[in-house]
Length: 241
Image (cartoon, rainbow, N blue to C red; front, side):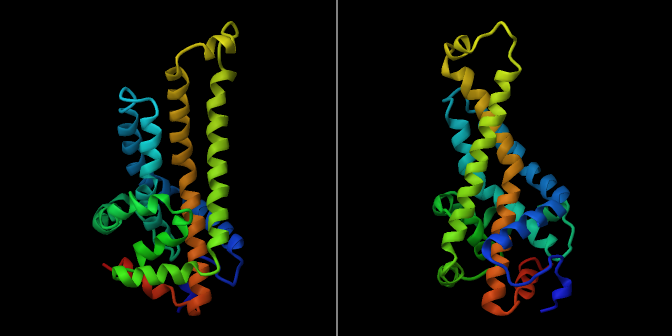
């Protein structure tokens, strides 16, 4: 493997150090990551919010359910950024079949409930293995590393919850002084549900790329341990013209 081709400074790391490296990768590639992610995420959020009249809890559920599918766009950009390749919306559109549609059933079912999905998602999306080999590969990647992956998911889940509450609390800070909190909570649940759903959507649109990047870097670190840096060929094959 030509290590110089990697935009990342690869060396043996603990899983948590690798997750931190992923966050730094996301920061360095923030512009293409957010341009591509928001191009997909904003329409999904808008369509989800349109279901608010059906049930006030439904938009939040739909946004939560769609996250693994949206993560595939983020991973596409990050996997190219790892080798210093810029990504534009045109690149994403040209690769839409394998980025958006090939993994759709699993993304919205089994993978939605996975507590380590950002760690194992590169296996499904980038390695291009047959179904049965993919299962064995995931087990190999996870062996001995499931605990840190679950911990990382829990940390981002906690951050997501805290940020959602913090953004929602802005409604209280900017309320007119004559409106008491008792008056606010005496209103229907819809009065609270809509701002909270919007806050949750905003947090997801901001935080999710860092979660995917942390899992992707943990995956690269694990691949480096298993295969002595034999990563470049697989990623380049995944995005070959």
